[in-house]
Length: 87
Image 1 (cartoon, rainbow, N blue to C red):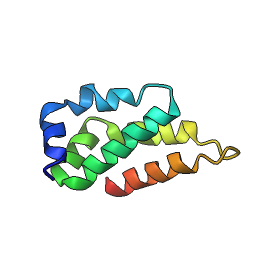
Image 2 (cartoon, rainbow, N blue to C red):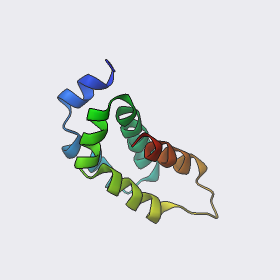
Image 3 (cartoon, one colour):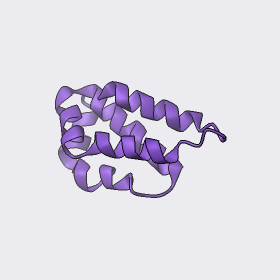
Image 4 (cartoon, helix red, strand yellow):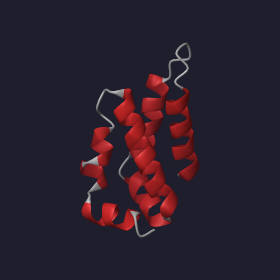
């Protein structure tokens, strides 16, 4: 889409957005995953870039390590599932 293209063309996903997944604050990770999900859902080319840069594996790793079933991190879980469905 016309909104994702400038982000992809002008922001190196591998060195910025995906690196933000390393920030150990769940709210930030949730927002980054939401952003990546939007980008991946816009175009197959963008989805492939995210996968090639390790985004899918990083999100699965974060999902595995951050789900607290007692706290019911539903928003985080919903964003992760949406990301996976867009990949």
